[in-house]
Length: 318
Image (tube, rainbow, N blue to C red; front, side):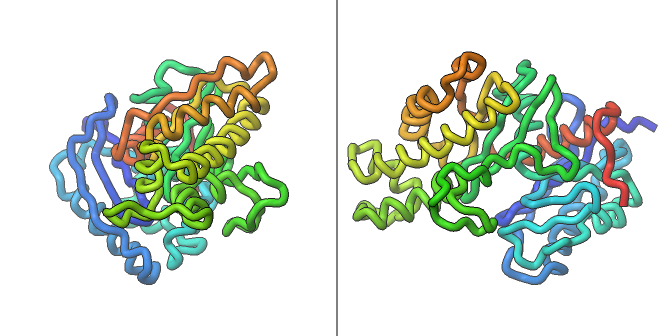
C-alpha cells in the first residue's frame, strides 16, 4: 500500500486545522473547526476529533502513515501532553493519546506551534536553503523555533526556540509565564496596543484599538504609535541578538499578525538589531518576512511528520 501522505494538525486558541499533505507540501484534503477555547478540555478534544474524522473519511487517508501535530504550548513531546496558555481546559492534557486512538494507532509527532512554523518556513518558505535560522511568530503571543545544521531543532520536549520568553528587561513587567520583562510582554500585539493606549494614543474613527490600529497610526506618523512599535522592535532585536550569539543563525524569519505591519515593524527592528548584534559572527543576520502565511502551522506539522518518516525525528512514545 502506498503511504506517501502526512496527516497534520495545527491547534491554536482560535482554530483547529487539519490536512493531508504530500511530500512536496501540497494539501490534498483540508478540515477546520473553531477552537472552543473557553470550554472544558473534553469539548476542545471533540473539536479535534471532528477534524480528524473528516480527514480519516477521505479516500486519501489510506495513504497516510503518520500524524504530525503543531500545538500552542507549552507542549511536552516526551509525555504527549499539552498545556496551551490560551486553552485553559487543557493542562497536561493527553493530546497524543487522544489523536492516536482516533487514527487507529498511527505514530504521532508532537511539536510546539513555533517549531511547526519554523519547519514550514524551512521546508517551503523564507528559510528554505538556510542551515541555521530562527523563525518567529509575533502575534497575540511571541513564539519561535530553530533550524540548526539544516534541520528543525524541536528539543527534547518540542519547545526549543521559544524566544518569546527570553527576558530582555530585568526590571520589566511580570509576564503570565512567571518571568519578568519577557520579549512577549513587550512585543506581542496586545502589549503593543496596551502600551500605546497607556501613553495616550487614541484609536481612529474605526475604533480599532488593536496592534493593527496602532500600526495604521504609526504609518500616518502618530508619534505615540511609532514609539510603541519601536519599543517592540527593540525587544525583538535584543532577543534575536541573544539567540544568534548562542547558536549562530544566518537568517530570522518573522510571521504572525504583528509582522503584517510591514516596515512599521521591520525598519526599527533592523535598526535596533545593529545596536544589539555587534559581534562579528552575528552582524550579517538577515531579517525577512515569513512566506507561508496561515498555512504555516499545518504545513509545519506535516514537515514534522515527514522528518519522522525520514528517520530524523522520533514519534511521541506514549
